[in-house]
Structures are given as structure tokens and as C-alpha cells.
Amino acid sequence: MQFDPVLISPRQAAMTAAGFWRHQTINHFMAQALQNCPDHTAVVAYRSDVPQPVRLSYRALDRQVDRIARGLTALGAGHSDVVSWQLPNWWEFIALSLACARIGAVANPIMPIFRQRELKFMLDFGESKVFIVPKSYKGFDYEAMANGMRGELPFLQHLVVLNGEGADSFDALLLRDDTPALTGEGLAPDEVLLLMYTSGTTGEPKGVMHTSNTLFSNLHGYIEAYGLTQKDVILGASPMAHLTGFGYLVMIPLILNATTVLQDIWEPRQALELIRDEGITFSMASSPFVVDLCNAAEAGGPVSPQFANFCCAGAPIPPVLIERARKILGLAVSSAWGMTECGAVTVTEPARTNEKSGNTDGRPLPGIELKVVDVDGRSLPAGQTGSLLVRGCSLFAGYLKRPHLNATDADGWFDTGDMAFLDVEGYVRINGRSKDLIIRGGENIPVMEIENLLYKHPSVAMVAIVGYPDARLGEKACAFVTVRPGHSFTLEDMSRYLSDNQVTRQYHPERLELMEDLPKTPSGKLQKFKLREAAKVFGEST
Image 1 (spheres, rainbow, N blue to C red):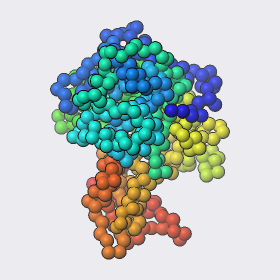
Image 2: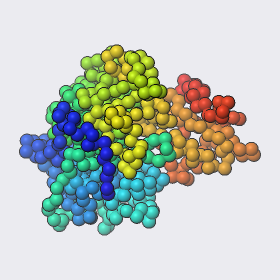
Image 3: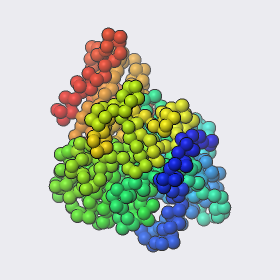
């Protein structure tokens, strides 16, 4: 694959001189662990279908990484080749991330929720050479799905099935003992480390490219903000195929030479038990995780005093939840904001959580600048809402094959597509989105893609999807639809149609409202703000 990380060279000298780009890859931190603490626990992986967790020291993890790296090399994967995988929070996810860096390949983790429609685009657009899937997970047959797509993926050379049998199994292809020792060079700090797709408003995902320098500069900021050390034990329950999971729950523990405890299926009572039994001190996820932990503790689940900090990103945190977590769990819940394109670039310091996390989304980490501008690009004073721009060390390397969409001006400012204001101390509050997106439980729903698909249904004349508030997930989706004369359309019809078109269940609207007409301006432009106002009542009534 020929990558085009055009946003790297303009920042290289300044970011290096300022010390934000340290020119270290994850290979450096693994070597550090093997020298200083080889027997320290690196990963404790709990799987819902296995009675006992897998425990790997750094020495044991390194052995597995070496085998997988040699296995990938034997399959023909090497420098700048894309290796994709659709795995839950299993130890093999972490090992694959490290193995790719060891041979200079590009890691492309994909959320397990995606099905053929999304996968065929991602794997083809990224020219993935190797694709790794579980045989099954949560009752779904990933092996059958992947095999059914192979004829439509001209770049894909190998399908690897974890927990599979026969010649395509993970053990047979990637855990072999008869492959040659590695001889090539590993990943360089300004080479693309990570390809991760993000939902947008164009109807197709965009491939976000990160290097070690862009990703790690942000992670070092979080380590310093929370005072994390090798002694910390970090809960990896949020999906690791999101940037939150990949960066903050996989890479940060490795940078620290600390311990990650993985949970593959979210179950809050079990999470509280893991927090107690494994001595977990920190985690990061969206606010529904905190709601569930509070509910589980109130229902009799254990509360552990060493579990002190939780970073909450993905949507604003209700102030009542911050107070509830403090009272029930003794937990400081800090607000944060970010995007796949830049990582979580703001955070509320744990010491100011009670004061700031309920009404702001944190302030920029070192190396990051924020600016709020009006429609003419002029900076706005504190308290005034406008378009949010960001620039700095952790901004991505660009969109794969689409540099014209990078939305970065000559001065390095990236247009986030969010509306926000800054307070007098520089804390930001996201108070709207100019991009047409719904965030449901931390998961971006590509509204335009779902709308365009529903327009193809023979019963649908017009459709508009908007979000409405939900106490647990932050937002849910409601489809407002006008029906063609003589036709009928139900919520069940809509869900079945989306499933038939291979749309992941998490993208299905939870509500359907039939209308005679949708509100429009005199020129015929749809007035979604009126629908958002109308949909608020659904959240209030749940």
C-alpha cells in the first residue's frame, strides 16, 4: 500500500523541537519491559466463553508477538501492508498490534459490530492483505461471513480464523514454530502505525492514518494528567477497535509497562469483581459504562477503593452521574473530548472533576491548541459558540487516499465539524455538531448513509434521522418518515430492511415516527432542528 501522510512533514520540526514527538514506537517500550520487568504481568484476558483468564507476562507476550510477527511475514505481510482484524477484547488483539509494529505493517482493527456492507468497503479501500476474524463471537459466525466476501476482495490474500480449525486457523498460520526469524526493520516513528475508519456524513467511512508520533504524543499527555505509572492496572472493557480502546487501553499500559485487564463482553457486575480481584485503578470509556457500574454497585456489587479515576469521553457527562459515581463508587469521573482524527485532546484534571466535568469537556493537553471561530473564520471570545478548530501534536497524518478531505488549513488548523465554546480558563464545551452525526453509547452513527439506504425502500417517500436524549447511552436515533401513498411502513419493516442490507444492528434507529410531511424552509431545505426539538420528548418519556 502506498500511504500519503501529508500532514506529518509540516509539523515535524516544531513538534520534535518542543518535545511532543519523541520518535519512539511501541517496539521501544516492549524492549524496555523485557529489560526491566520481563516477569511483570502485561495482560490478563477474561473471555466469556473460557472459564479461566489468560495471564501473560511481558516475556510471555513477547514470545507470542514474535511468533505472530513471523507468521505474518510468512504470509507475505510486511512493510506498509495493511493487516486487518475484527476481534473482541482478546489478548490476540494486543499481540497483533505489537506484531504489526514489529514488521512495519499497518494495524487496521475493525469493530466486531460491522457486517458485510461496511467490511467490504473498508477491506477493499485499505487494500488489506490479511484479515483475521474469530470463528464466532456472541453467536455470530464471522468465519462464514468472511468467506462469503472473499470473492469481492481482490487485495485480500489470506483469511485467518481465530479459534478455527484446519489450514486457515490462527494457530496454524500465525502461531507456527517453523517460521524463520525476523530480519527486516520494524516500524519507524513517522510511518503509518494505525489505519482506523471513522463514520462521517459522506456515506462512506474515512480511513484515518496515525503514526507513532501523532498517537503517542497524546497518550503521554494522558499519562501525565492522571499520574499513571507501572503500578497501575487498567481495565480494558471499551472496544479496543475504537481509538479509545486502542490508544488508551492497549498502548498506554504498554508504554507504562503496566497491566491491562481485558473484558470481552461488557457485564457490569463482573467488571466490579474484576476491579476488586485484579486491583484495577483506572479505565476509560463512554458514560454508559459508568451508569452500569453505579447500577451494579447499588444492586450489591463490590466497591473497590483503589479504583480512583475514570476518563469519560464520547458525549457530555450529566452532572448527576458524576456525583452518583463519587458517592457510590468513590470514583472521580473526568470529562474528555476527542476524535479519531486527533485522539482525546482535552481532559478535566481529576482534582477539578467535581467542579468542571459536568459543564465542560476538559481543556487541551500540552501540544494541542483549540480555537472557536465564526462563519468568517474570526476567533470568538470566551462564551460564544462557533466552529471548533484544533491543531497540534496528535492531529492525524491525513485521510487515506483522500487528502482533499483533510479539512486542515495552511496554518495547521483542523475543522472538527463540532460547535463549541471556550470558557475563560480555556475549558471547552461541545454544544452541537455541524456534521450530521448521532453518538449512541460512544458509537458514531453515520446518519446520511442510513437515510440514503432508507430512501431506496419502496414505501419511503422522505426520511430524516435525528438523535434524542437517553439516560444511559447519551443518544438514541429516531427516523421521521413520510410514506408513499398506498404503502405502509413499521419499525419492524425498517429494522428488517436494514438487516437485509447488512447494516449493523447498532445503526438501526430505535424509534420510527410517521408524518404527513417533514418540516422545510420556503426553499425546500429540511429543518432538522425542528425534528430534534420534537424528538426530545422521547428521551424525557423514557
